[in-house]
Image (tube, rainbow, N blue to C red; front, side, top):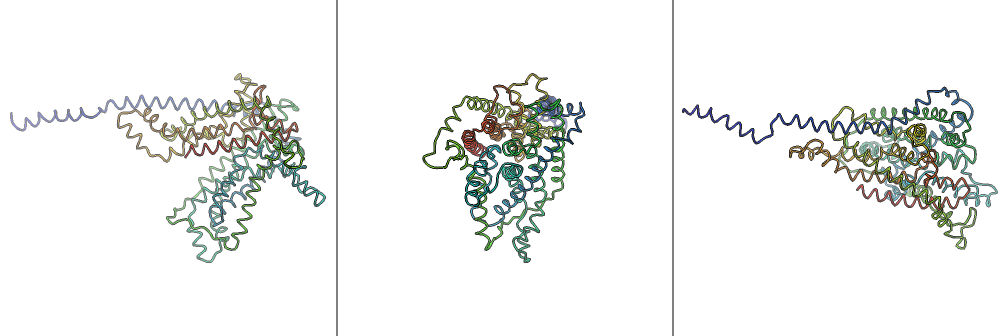
Length: 568
């Protein structure tokens, strides 16, 4: 045999050996098809769950609202006045919150103000206190029998300021909203290079002029986004208007709907309520569209490699530091001290002395049967909501960030949609469909509403770290022979578990203190802690309500600290 024939005979043998060491191309399509089908089934299941939890109640509101013509009712009587009050309080409180949050962001993140780190922690405290608890605390400070008005009346013959009424509603809504503005504006401020401000200073501009002409124009998109988010949230808040507004007959849409549900003072209350809910839903949708348009119109600046240069305040540093510390401490620590003093006093108006201090309110509030029932229901519903939202949010966040599909954006948008919808609308939607799904007058109806309202927390918590994680680990698993579904579960899913746990803890802590949804979907034997505090306040047991509010606030602060530590 010639050498050429040997070479030609040996060639196919070498090729076959090479092929035998690598997977055959014909095997991969079948494997990918099977794993692709598994991921598609998972995505379909998540779509069905989101449709049942989000689209079904929202669709019920729209269908019932258009089944009868109640639109003229929105332009007359109590509904019109309540709508105007809601719009005024939402817009004014959002404006004040944007002004306060932006000023704090500039002072704490852009200037050499003293004690910025500690101030930042104190400034974010109102975000951790339920709004209705804050309302109870401020009644102890600026109510008719509060120490501020009593002292002012003694000195000048008349009260300083009665917190009850529309101005008190706007004030408290702004206090509990400005931390959200601070977080949004501060994040945008960190993306603006300080080189621009330093260039303006070199050109002769003062620190105030540099901020006014350079920084504030670049912050306008973030400020507008924060304004829309806060205004929509405040539009349907229930706790503050019910506790602060109703004593002065300042009625908003949320308190009006509560009255319709409880007293039935209008014909076809569900149809009227659904019509109001559609209006609120349209406002929320418009706010989302505005936020999307603003985010698309934002321009990116090249990041600066130099260290952040803080603007010197000069001679104004000391007075600004003192004024900022005083304002922040009054807003954050004073309400907590007021809750503590009211919890330790036997009745409102009793002087704060050592002889009058007692633990009877705390013992009575924690040992009452209604409190124990509310605590058990709140813990059960919030823990179940945290577990369900944790699993669903983990699955949705992993699928939409680690797989490719045209429907991923729509799925994530659907899961995040309830975050922009007022809790009032969510409660109305589940109230409409409750009789048809057999959950009317059961605590499970509240659980369904909790899952809808808070699933976005876990999705957002999971998506952020996964987006920042490269795909190399999953690719290595695929090279080692794992299927797409196995790599997704073993790598991405497990990497996102800590974030999902932190998000679930936040869901539990948010749900256990929730009021708007719970008070509208209240069922016999399904009283929650938030509703229990609200009932005590409405019944005139102010000191017992303060004691229970103080306990919930302290537990919430401790739990949020645990969640933050778990996230790190």
